[in-house]
Image 1 (tube, rainbow, N blue to C red):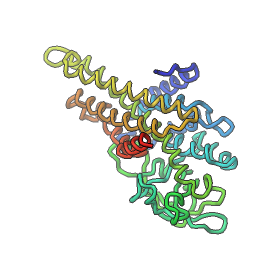
Image 2: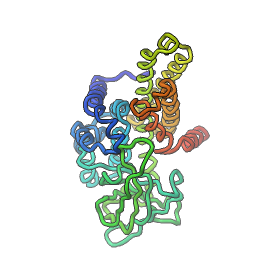
Image 3: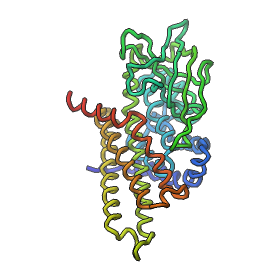
Image 4: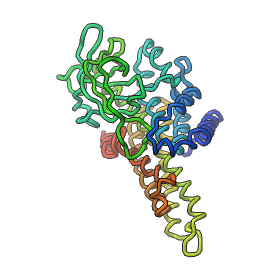
Length: 379
């Protein structure tokens, strides 16, 4: 059943839509071509309360419910997925773990600048040889006086080079396997944190993604998030929220691709009539609409459960799997409907096609989502 939105939720959605159309859209294509990070836009989103949407007002956030956050994220993704993923990472896997597992001092120290957009945050789990396999982490945290020294490498870190505070996983007790992983809040401005140049990516070119090398990077005892050995728990909690966020991003991209396809099918003529009157195109549009609607319902269900504090690992993985796979298909069909024009950078569907492809990979690949879903069902 489709949720009945409150007046507040609709107001937040509409505010996000207006800002996306009027402020983000005009420069989206140019930023993509130049791989330019949207610093001014992120600052404005912070001023609007969109960089820490579910963070309570006491810690500098907007204090809204999780569905409101998802509605806003979807609207922004329709216009610029690079802005959406920057916002999503800051909300879902930087602010959220600190809010749930952080001490009062950590919340005061980190959430206020993150939620206001004063600084950006991120999430350091993936390594060159350890993505979805957390037990294979090689990054080590060695106990020293007053804190820990981190050594290792992290790969594909969103907001790297532009962010400051990163929820970071490292092995503190190797003999304990997954139970020996701990989580820290790492200040990227500390000595020993080396950010490589941004990756040259196919899509999401305005979002910054980097390799990070840690060489005796110090984190104080007060920067341990949760207790020793809680790293996997912190990571999985963050990933549940992150997966819902990426699924919402995929829905936004797919909806834009569908909108563009409908408009083009009405105006482009072939064989003496609009291509929308050809059955082949109608079949594509009908399937695109069905997949977008189904994806949106799965995402909203997971968001509502997350907001109510219910376990939602199954629902988050299902939404991430279906919404992202569907969005890739929808964008592929959009390019097909546009024909040769769909392959041209002058048309937005070309950018949508490039941007959407990674949604089936980051925050857990589709293959991993299938494993998560199956294991949940078999418990």
